[in-house]
Length: 323
Ligand code: C5P
Image 1: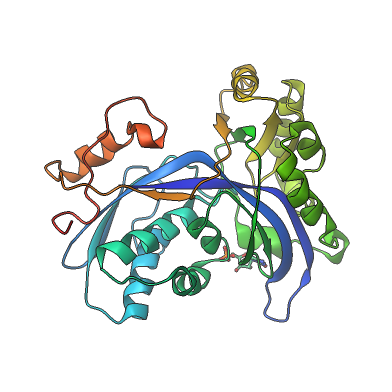
Image 2: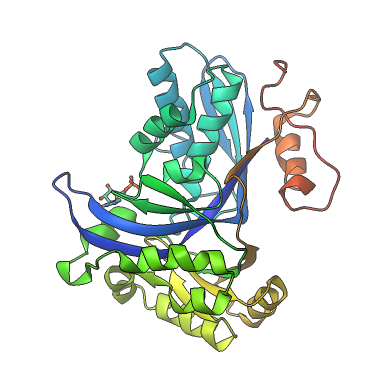
């Protein structure tokens, strides 16, 4: 069983356009405790089952691409069946697909006995997407380059409220709308990385920034509505995450985050009160108990207390029969 956390971008600055077509970024990414669950089972070929409508199960799925890419990079003839229990909204700016891909890389490194060091996995991760390397790590990072050059950031715990309008936003389209007027110098990201140490939620909230908002928000008026609703409900500050459309607000405490969440009553919005994670974005549990079928394992795994639920631990099957 793997738990793959979402992230928010507390700051996302676009510094310019690169010769390779990507944008030069300075961003502070922070993992939060809204997580997908994955079970990896030995199998003859590569396969994927997802519990959510609208999530592709074909080769376009980043979790499956992670397995394919790692198998090719390792030059081995091994298979895996991935069961993906999706809780992070898709195309939401929360890095869900990237986190699933990182979880598959870490899980298969173990399941296939590769023993690759983190730096080698990070190369494969970067080939899958610029957000993927972040999820191989812990807590918060300052990302530069295309977002894949990472420095760890010491971060105090924060409570946040995530609001998602139940439609997706394309990352490539968002970056495609960026103009030089949206470029900034990266100092906001560095300042926020320093501030995060202080545990002062109000100062962090006042320093949130996302340069992509100017490219995305005019096309999705809901983004301004979500921000206004978060602030009206008591959030200390609010910003869009990544390429959106999810907007998050900073609360004084987790209890405060729950109060804010309860005040957001618009039926079409999905809202979560979450805590930031200091530990690994991907967490792995192995077990010698392997009697559950895939579906059952995925369902029971959702209640695993290690991942924030309240029921007894579920038997899990990563490395089934091998450990
Ligand atoms: O890295 P990822 O595949 O998630 O990026 C999706 C798209 O977003 C890229 O193809 C590129 O158009 C854009 N992008 C960018 N600059 C970055 C990261 C992504 O222009 N630093």
